[in-house]
Image (cartoon, rainbow, N blue to C red; front, side, top):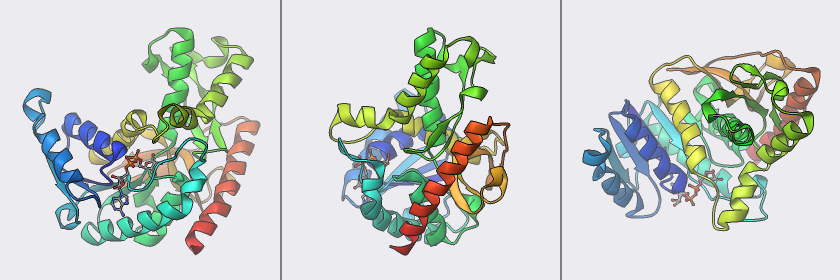
Length: 308
Ligand code: APR
């Protein structure tokens, strides 16, 4: 099992650490344009092996030869936000980077599953799918797992319960039209609405929507990467281990939920071939309407990015 990660910044290097420590990959390759950075990080990670107890070989490179034959490629290359910026402000810069990186990764690993995490997420995923010319099922983006993890954390913190007891998903875009789905959220198996009043749920939904910006404002020099890398690792694992688990991801939706031909956040069954199916859950009419609104909002931007 070989996993390549383009972009050895905070996100890429944290993801490399999480994948290596999880132990299912034989090889993790980090590639970046900055000379020495991926090599130095790979050496540092390799030197943690005796203590962190993993045997995954981590390699750093400025090229793509070393990524050849990867099973999974993750694109984290690009610039992160600064305070006051929206993810959309990164569009042009990251579109250039993501196109270039996608071409090179796919030339070396034509059979890989591609996972995109660079922002703006839904647009960069659509771009990578177009540039790669891979089947759409083999290209997906990470957003919903992160957004739902944020939602779950806020609920768990509010109620003082273990985070793993809170189950929830978020759909829609990784941005303004994110759709947290409180109707399907549970705490210890019971509906969230039995544990929290509507006003508290609405407050948590809003904090989830603003979750990335809250961290950008605190960090001032970049964006979140610990929870994002945990979310991306969950997707890498689902593909690498062919788990068939259902996770919220940015997937190509063509028919489900009455949505046609767009990358947007939906629950999807993931396995060795990427997205095996988009899963249609019972949403309330408001949630379904919000998901369709999100799909239309990202469609416009996705068309724009493909014209760049
Ligand atoms: N090829 C390879 N690597 C590149 C390229 C390129 N063409 N252009 C930039 N990079 C690398 C940078 O050298 C840097 O090491 O991408 C890395 C980005 O790392 P950071 O600046 O630390 O940003 P990070 O926090 O990792 O976020 C990366 O993920 O969450 C999103 O919005 C975020 O789009 C951003 C991405």
